[in-house]
Image (cartoon, rainbow, N blue to C red; front, side, top):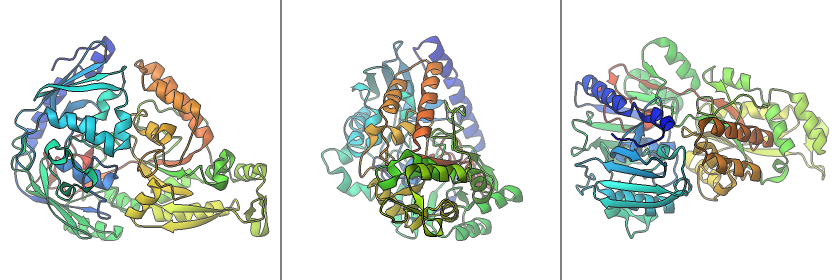
Length: 536
């Protein structure tokens, strides 16, 4: 691989070839058996299986086995080949030339080429996914000089540009299936056509999603598994029992309760892998709809935060697994800083802020608005554990400062719909960070990403012109030290405005039977392709 870059940039990429070689040799050496039917679990049916649409992690986790991107990322966040076998970056940092893998076919037998990449990046993704459209804003042109080459030219340098191209973020879609069609209504959405190691064979809603080996997968001898079945199991205790009994081979922190995770960690009966969550770096938080009544006042939002004991939440809701969040950037993400003000547990401070706003205490110490009506906050609950227990704690904590809480439990599909369409006051959420504040935090807090009907955008409606300008500045700054300084300013300003209550930087696990190997080989873990996984 030839990389044409400045010395600082070279240092970041110089070992790619060695990493690729080691990763491939480890994969080939350890994957000694073929065959096997792997069974895993999901809380609910995915909203869809097409990653070009802005669905959540339930879609991505399955779609990553069917679709691919130009590159992948190692667990230490170094770029690795995907559908692109190599890439060059010009000395001015403006031109990226990707050389595509040879012998790749879609699982319907059609040949993959640069035309599919051009169609995906120029047409489909900008039309279907607001995050993808925003990510490609600095692109001047995308061209294909031949069937195996894609050249992307930028308007200006973007420091995190390569990080945009994993399939979980920027999936390559089949031109011959989608070109000239209504993307949303295309029949292929029910039977996806991808280049990945597996293909969909059956989706029985409410019961299971079954994938089978793509016999024509380009990366021989992968995949090793014959099939992957996702069993739909709404009840967390049932998922844990299925894993313990051996009916299920794999589950993750997303499907297991925090108490079960704590128990499995000490039992020694399972393989517990904390790697593979680096790219998404999930954060549990409360998203606040700043458009709604008293929530428009930052002091009220600050009071809600001061009323919550995050240490109690970590210890008793997440059983001590994770770290207390300090703001909109996770501890595990580059450019994080703890040198900012935060909201320690201080109910007296919360009450003082409510007094300052003029929300007087009425009967039973309930806070009243100017018309004498009790203040009630509607709390939308993310389905699954431990979010129900978290909601109960929040209701009690806010009751302590005179704020009533209306707990609103919905299924996952309705949670997505209500979040995307701003139908909430405060919502419990779990948001990924996407390995860089310019991708994750920017999506959630830049006012240019306020888009009704679009999930994982700025759903709370937060606007701060200074923050927008700093995000825009950071997106162009190539000096890591200066870029870090800008992101530190961003974190302080957002924390002061309190458009969210950041709770826990989650530590996640992939839990598997000990005869399951090679599940986690990249920064995506359960969202990875599982092409090299096998059962002993």
